[in-house]
Length: 161
Image (cartoon, rainbow, N blue to C red; front, side, top):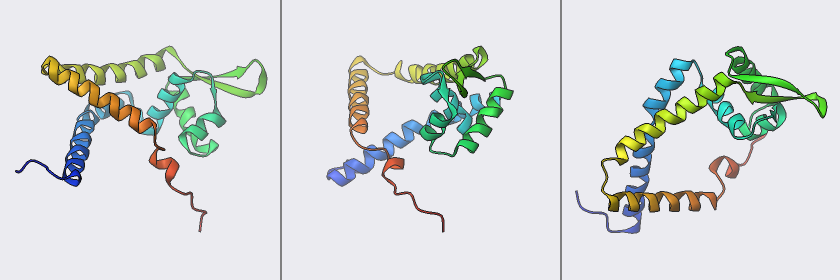
């Protein structure tokens, strides 16, 4: 196969390579999630709450871009699994703060650790020059991605028909 020469070919190769690299972690993550009995929406909640402990249900639903009822159902399931707790907000008794339990913290950390360990094992095989190039490229990807709106923020919301 010929080396890409046009910008379109380079873009196609880079996009495909990035997608293939990202997919490497999916089977590992899915295995860990399944072992814990956690769905993808629940996993998103765990990581959002880990990032912002004491979140309330309304703000969590907004960050997930779902209704409060849907978020509440997922939070209830995570509370039942012992991964989240709901505590009354000392400043506003009508507001419930959602936090990770010790078990929830361990679950989130084990998922992160499994992914990080796998990527580390892959990178162990790289030369120092390759690691520097990958590190630089990934930093650029993150910086550039942060500078443009995420796709779900671009799509116009349609009113129900």
